[in-house]
Image 1 (cartoon, rainbow, N blue to C red):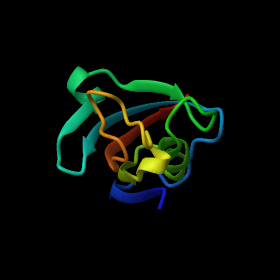
Image 2: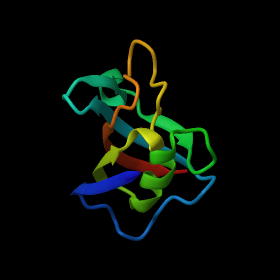
Image 3: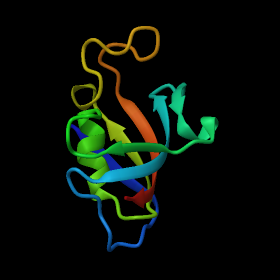
Length: 108
């Protein structure tokens, strides 16, 4: 499946991140059972990263560039676009589908 995007709140529909852009976003990562495994919102510190260059899981590299500036979306990411058969020991089970509530705050 890969990544499925559901818009929660529309962005400006004009500015989209491109491969190599540095972006700033808030996110909440949950498992299918609703368990939160990570959250930039809980830390009250937005996440800054480069998009589309392999620094992130494939689901983010493909899902976030579909979002426009200011958009908040739910990204459902299958394990092959997430952490795969290995997962993240003690945090994310093997073959887990991940659900991210992502808000694109800035394209730097």
